[in-house]
Length: 80
Image 1 (spheres, rainbow, N blue to C red):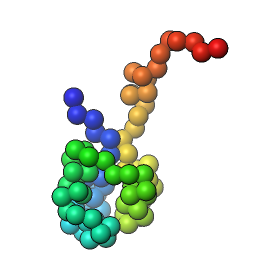
Image 2 (cartoon, rainbow, N blue to C red; image 1 turned 180 degrees about the horizontal axis):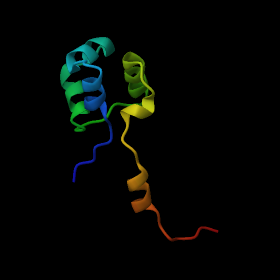
Image 3 (cartoon, one colour; image 1 turned 135 degrees about the horizontal axis):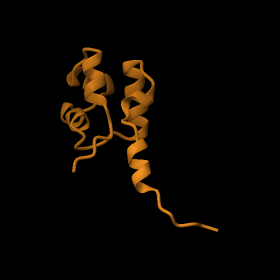
Image 4 (tube, helix red, strand yellow; image 1 turned 60 degrees about the vertical axis):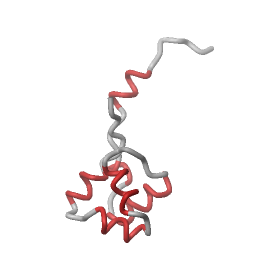
């Protein structure tokens, strides 16, 4: 099952920006941006911060919520 970690494609569409525009802004290869948009690969935290600055959005808007995942990862093991 694919994990859709970032919302980069959606945020670019909302702002009517293209992958090529973002690639030029960040000085990255357009193929790299494409991989991020399809969640095939993920940008580093530093790059995610730069993306948020380019798009003038809160970095959290570039990420999908982990609420559902967090509940699935909780264990009943007590430590201490």
